[in-house]
Structures are given as C-alpha cells and as structure tokens.
Length: 188
Image (cartoon, rainbow, N blue to C red):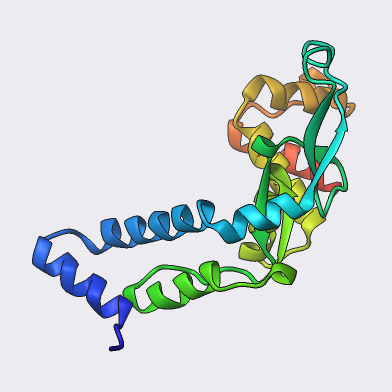
C-alpha cells in the first residue's frame, strides 16, 4: 500500500475544515519533533560528545567534568542546549502539500555522514545563507545587522563608535539603519 502524504494531508485538511497553512505548519513541527526524538539523532549526538574539564566556577566543584560538543563551523565547544544537528543536504522547503513527502524523507532518512553538529547561532547563520544564496560570512553580517537594528540604542552606540559624530547621525530610523548597514558591510 502506497500513501501519498501530500494528498492525505490535503484530504484531512478539507474533511476537518482546517486551513492549509495550519496543516503544513503542523506537519513541519511534527516531522522536526519526530527527528528530534529519534534514536538516530541520539546516536549521532552520542558519537560527537566530548567529556571536558568544567571551567564554570559556579559548578566545577560539583561537576568537574562536563559534556560538550564541537561546532563544525566555529570549532568552539558548546553544551547540549546550545547545539543542533544540521542536515548537510539542505532540507526541502515545505510550502505546499506537494512538498510534504520530500520534506519528511529529507529530514528523517539521512545518513551519519550527512549530518554535522553546529552551535545554534552557526546553524541560524548557515540556514540564512542557504535561503538567501550568500556565503556564511555574508549571512553572519546580515544577521548581525538585523539584531543590532532592532535595538535603537545599540545601533546608535555602534554608529558613534565607528567615528561618526552625533551631529552627523541621520534623523530618521531608515537613514540610521542605512548608515549602520554601510558601517557593517564596509560599503561607501
């Protein structure tokens, strides 16, 4: 018996009178949760863990050694709450019911050599880079721009620390963001 996952999700959405957007969002979450709880993911994480000396002064007496994972991009060590397992072959987008089965297969049916441990921040940057067709370094700057531009005080502090005098700071938020972009991207 063969099941067309996309068609079944579409049928159920119609029968239960649930919007396509809600069903697709649920499917994405369900597949990711299934992967997150899988014995395959646990096995890979177990293989990548390192037991190291605890350098946290608040807990090293009680826990002299701790488990850490090395980010494959930054090469820094992180605790289990600060890493994610990344699929090297980018996950398929899940925008329509037609994508449902491929999304499931790409996430669930992988191999150890197609996975890597990344810090959560590195994973966000890598995903951004892939979605926007840019290098990791470019994406890192873009993500930093987004983070800074949400905090007006921080944005103004960075503008001032770049050598711009307070009298030369643009009046509008849009112009301030453009100046920040020029500073971060070193464009003229």
